[in-house]
Amino acid sequence: MKDVKGDLQVHSNWTDGQNSIKEMAEEAKKNGLEYIVISDHSKYLAMTGGLDEKKLLEQEKEIDQVNKQLGGMTVLKGVELNILKDGNVDISDDALKTLDLVGAAVHSHFDMNKEDMTNRVLKAIENPNVDFLIHPTAREIQKRDPIALDVEAVIAAAKQNGTVLDIDSYPDRLDLREEYIRRAVQAGVKLGISSDSHSMAHLHYLELGVAQARRGWATAEDIVNTRTLEQFKKMLKQ
Image (cartoon, rainbow, N blue to C red; front, side, top):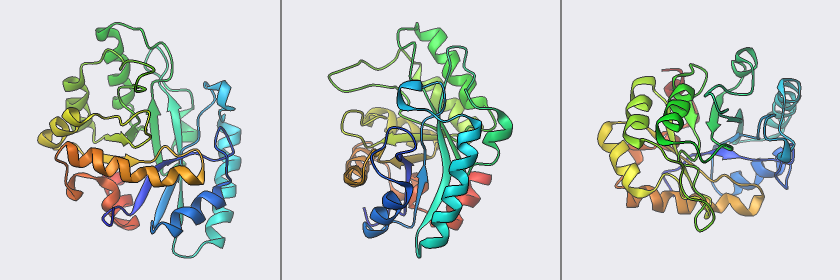
């Protein structure tokens, strides 16, 4: 845990989180982090009050205000996009270009066959605005099986496109699972650990993500959010 500098997926009360952006940032700072990414859901996930382009812009302004009030902690602007059935995402390219970290995830049509599902996810990975594939196999332990996915093809595409693969720390997910983490490490793909927190109490879930990364034989070098804020930003630009 001492190696982890940031949290790459934090939800606020702008969508389905319980706490404000400032509250999440202050709690993360208490936990020793330097930065968090606010990654609230985008508009297709209506059940969470997902944000459209206008709301995302309003949230960015609030993040700017929060950053002026924090010392030793930075809130980065992000989003958790929906990967639609055809592999497109549900926010315009122009809006995505204003964000620091763009994540994307499968939240629907979980029963697609392996070929179609893989092509769907690969299209999202190849989107130049998508930096981060969130909970890549969409599993929920003891609730929903992983989607049918050619993980080797996803790892290869992530390597080719410089896309970071998520290790989602939320106890119901722990996604990627350890054997896929190991394969990603062997392929030289960068991984990121996120708490997927929806309240201040969830921020401690990062510890589970660290444990999951270790089970997959990942080291601090393999995890992008072991970098300082400036190092992390430069890595994303590359």
